[in-house]
Image (cartoon, rainbow, N blue to C red; front, side, top):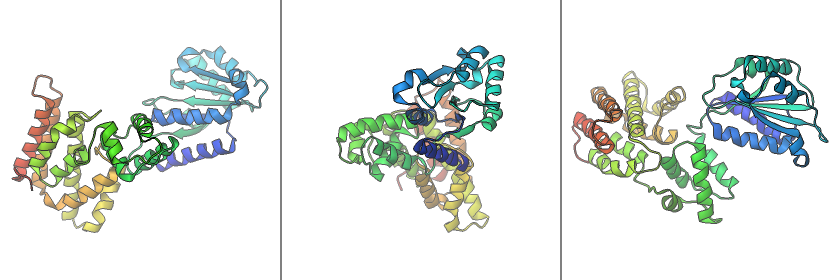
Length: 353
């Protein structure tokens, strides 16, 4: 998540706390779940509960024409200081409606708060960004996801241990919506007690030592037999596919190749982990686990691999990716296992280290 996105979300949080808002917001970015959460918090403060039915309108861009836009934004509040209009999917406005919106944004009414909400995948509209207070919600990754899980658990009235956070992320990934659903179940399950590893194992169906991160570590340490023993358990975990396993393995092996090349170019071991962090920040690559876990693991095994070994491992994973997209070939478990065997054969490590 970028520093600019952090700043924009902080400004929104401060405005919600103070109850003082600009004339218009644009909520956009790839994370629809946190976007919707922010909208709920914003409406909870910006709209008076007693007059909510009169002073809140929620519409979609494709459902309104220029006349409707004009009416929505020119209607004064009733028995309140402010009216709020939420317009979702503003990119779907037809040209006359968009022109009406742009005219209002050029000279907004002082007693109307307009909240534009763009869906994930929508192209950034620079004109709207410039005319509003824009708030970006990027997908959580790196060192941001763990603290968000902890904070969200507290919102459910529960504490969660660091180990439980790691295990939960290994099972669910970094999808805030999926994480929130699991935290809701976990908070009910623990009934006020801290959410620990045992609770995550019981409710989510994952155990320490059987995660995608554990599989990645075994491959990174050249423990081929142990990695193969984990394939079946890892592939049965919720919302984890063979393609994702291969993607995470490919990210790891590409990173190790990059790191090994940097070491051979003279980069010292103490600087390597920082270099891996910088690499991830600019890549958006799928690591299959929190960035800090990935970076620590990569730093520990970089020098176990030669560049030719890594080249052969990457070739094996490319072949596995192509095979997974061909419905006529073997099962997912067989494809992933074959890729791991090929990586082990390329390094001469057929047994556990």
